[in-house]
Image (cartoon, rainbow, N blue to C red; front, side, top):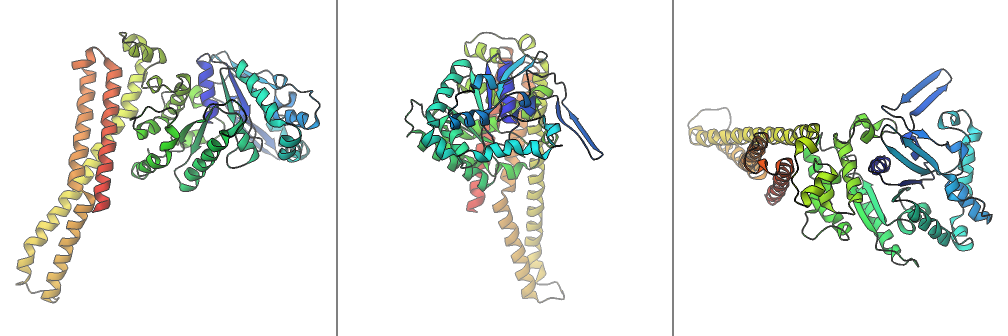
Amino acid sequence: MALANVAALLSKYGKKILIVDFDLEAPGIENYFKENVLNYNKNGVSISLNKINSDFKFSRSRAECNGLLEIIEDIAEEENKINWKNCLMSVNSSKHNIKLDILPAGKEASEYASKLKSDKEASDYASKLQRINWDFLFNERDLANKLETIRNEWKNEYDFIFVDSRTGISDIGGICTIYLPDIVAFLFTTNQASLLGCTDVIRRAKAARKKLPYDRTSLITIPIPSRDVSIYERDSSYSWRPVFDVELAEFFNDWLPIGTPIRTVIETFIIPFFPYWSFGDRLPVIEEGTSNAIGKSYENIALLLLGNFDLSKVKTGLTTQDIDNIIEKKEIKPSSKLPNMEIENYLKERVEDQIQYYSVVSRRNRLLYFTTITFQIFLGAYLPISTRVSVPINAELQISLIGAFIIILTGLQAVGNFKEKWISYRKTAEKIKQEKFRFLTMSDKYKEEEFAYFVTKMEEIFANENAEWINISKKESKA
């Protein structure tokens, strides 16, 4: 899904794009561009899921052309009959100004909907896949050199070639992470199996890459956290940020300027999880543009590639041309260069969301602080009186219990840092509100630099708050 959306954006930016479906065990990258994701009618069950605002047209279907499997079979049999250029499916959308080519995984006897009706047709593709002997191909059929020739031809024909790879440690995974790419974008979720599994595969790929007998640059890597649920579970999600700092630092060495906060960069490319987009094969960047959170993440990845890893070109609420103008110190007017909706979305989805969050957690910590301190004062005052009050329990036990409660409340305050958090979060919320007010009234520097300056100031505040949050967390750990 990430690959299809980023490829669509770069095509929209005017780049010549090839998508290679090397995920042979789970093919179907072309489904993201089809008008009908699924049109299923069998045994009285009818399902039809349609794309929204889609007018993509295919030059032909997988039933009408060969694919990677047929190319590999041709190499195995030494027939030299199949050229990859004759296997392409061209996709275009005049409405969205998108045109790209897809090299499918392999020939299919029918479209996906028809395939469900015939077990024999479905088995054709699987039997071809099972017959592949990768050791034989590399050792006896010189597959490595033939892949190198094809790779060079791809690079001569296209601006960007996207290869959809099978995950994990496998022959196909090795081809897609060692032989073919200049860049590997690896997506993972916030659990140890996914994060550590992915980083292990990439370390193996980087090491093996150095041993290739071909002219290659070092393998550039882009770590991308995906299915992020910060919007639902902010505290749990943010507890993983220090883990990212430690585990992913080495993967930024080839392109991230020294001194750039890793966490800020990672958060620029995090792909959030929204249930709405989890049904079917979807292109949010086409259906709703890049003003929504998931579309913005895909756009940031596309702009990183488009700008040759220049972070200043990555989306900050401005168009690519606007960013170029800022870098060249040219005057720009957001009212004429920047759609107002872009500003509104940033205010709503980024600024207002942060104001609400910091206000809520500030009130919560204020309440916890005053609750614990009130009980502390009450119990402390009651302690000397308790020796003279007749109660059903032993006086010494009563004093011990009160003392224990006071210690517990004191400990909770020390661990929770309720007062420090209350003041810190309140200060951050007010700082964001103040900066927002300055921007809306176009006061101070906003008269000159306007939206770009506003975004910069906002992101600095958020980054500083993240750093402060780490300090408080460390104090809690010590406590």
